[in-house]
Length: 146
Image (cartoon, rainbow, N blue to C red; front, top):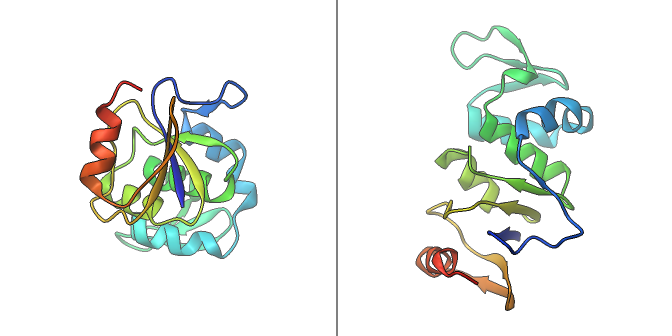
């Protein structure tokens, strides 16, 4: 289940990765395995050819994996680095759907970024940990100042 953080709720011992493209290109790309192929297909509608290349969804041209969308890179960062917190502000709906469906990971955003298809998430605020199974409840939590 994804854990969601908002303003002032990130533990002081943790840092939020805000520039997902750079983090992916420097760190996560070296961790990729066959599991990444499904995420790449779902979010960017591309085929992973090997650890460092994908087939363009338009004409099949071989592209460097750094050409993935920021949303796809963010999802892969979350998937391969479940102990870090990643900012999801630059993610589109297709990436959010994949992220909110993940079994584990930590995300952050200053404002509500929620997949319409979310099933269950943990949310952390100054009052502790909450579990939400409803889009509207999570949206209201995000608006709360705690």
